[in-house]
Length: 126
Image 1: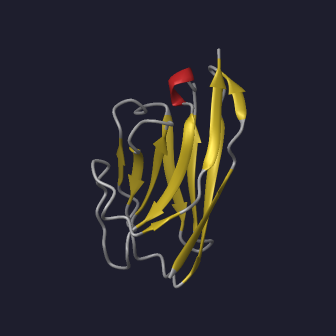
Image 2 (image 1 turned 90 degrees about the vertical axis):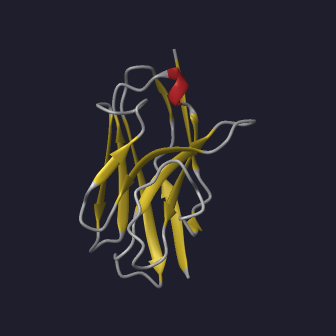
Image 3 (image 1 turned 180 degrees about the horizontal axis):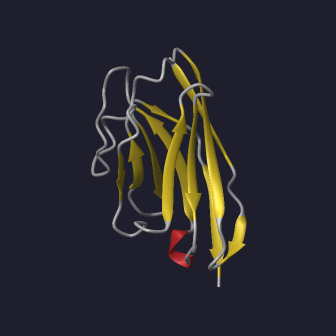
């Protein structure tokens, strides 16, 4: 089992930056993909960015050029640097991880990601 705990959510003004972190614990060896998803009440969970163990990344079109996903496999931590935040970026942000040896970077499905954190809230106001 893998446990994921997100942090870093806050309320910021549009145009500002924020960095989210996700620490993994439990049965982890770094050989799995990780991703950030977000969800607004009443809407489906949306993939934001994903990264595989080799550091290859995938981004949703809405965040390309503004968000950067990275990971520290030694510290078992996933990061999301969010620049030039927009009001529409407001959501509950979830960290997700696949089972060991699954290296998908899909952002269109949630089922490949077996492990999920409880989320950290980001609010962007005008």
